[in-house]
Amino acid sequence: MKINMVLPTVDISGGVRVIAIYAQRLAQRGHEVTCVSCTARPASLRRKIGSLARGRGWPANPRPRPSHMDSVDVAHRVISPWRPIRDADVPDGDVVLATWWETAEWVAALSPSKGAKAYLIQHHELLFEGMPRERVAATWRLPLHKITISKWLTEVAHDTYGDPHASHVPNSVDTDQFHAPPRGRQQQPTVGMLYSATKFKGAQVSLEAIGRASKQVPGLRVVAFGAEPVNPELPLPPGAEYHHRPPQNAIKDLYAKCDVWLCGSRSEGFHLPPLEAMACRCPVVSTRVGGSMDVIDEGVNGHLVDVGDVAALADRLTRVLKLPEPAWRQMSDAALSTAKRYTWDDAAQRLESALHVAIRRSRNGMHTASSADLIQAESAGLQVQGS
Image (cartoon, rainbow, N blue to C red; front, side):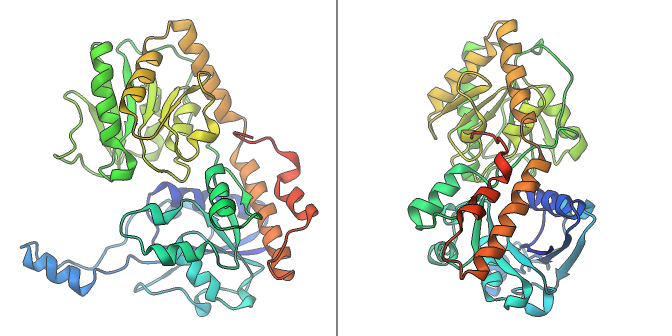
């Protein structure tokens, strides 16, 4: 197939990493892949004037940022300056894939020659603060074949937007990049977390849970990493080890330092770190968000608690940290087994099948998918996480 992938501004976010992985894997499977993205959107005049009024000066134009697309060996067109992507930017193809709500609007407006239209949905973005809710919701109703990365998004497509035809293609983890040798618990009890001051990432919830757990587990150490400096209004505990934008090949060592990985997020589309931690033999305690609900087997490879339940997070965190060594190793082994049972090659096969469904549905007017289409979209019976 000739596959076009339309991206927003690329960066080092998890969503862009997933797209980069798929672009590379689809190319390796013999497809002709072209990615099209935009440079960063410049600040609005209102925002520039506001910055000047607050004494911060006139904002400079955005500079190119590192991204996961930098190491991908596929054609990548970057449109500059920022503007909506249109027909002239996208080669003719068999299928064109939107990857964010705004790109879904752009893809919907492309001519049929660019390919059958599909939409890789990585979050329910109207949950983000500041999003144009009506426009975001409208993208779910566009005549694009929906491809979701976690079960809860498939349910949103069906239950909220009345689309029963969405293909479910879960994320995986690269066990060549994320791995650790067999190990026991750390000499000093250690919990790991992703740090972000963005509210829905739930770092405040995680830190409150760690504070409670530290009263039950003396000497509890915190290892964290993130894409931003630590915000003074959301400090890490004294003595915490923080890594700001660590090299990709160093992240596995951070996971391997931990006895448990903690996720206190309020909302996630999938969220890769818990599964990456599992690949590094680390049990996970998480709120019921995103892919964690699909991969965590309660009490076997980790624990799930309700969103915002600090007391429950602290309790499950303490339980894992206080496990006898043999029981902890059993949970660690189960975490690794979870991470290894479904590969990115499996995911690429499922995505490929979903794109074939998009092509057939486009020919049929997007009204239905045949039984044969749906069977193929399940990738010939591949057993996946949470299924």
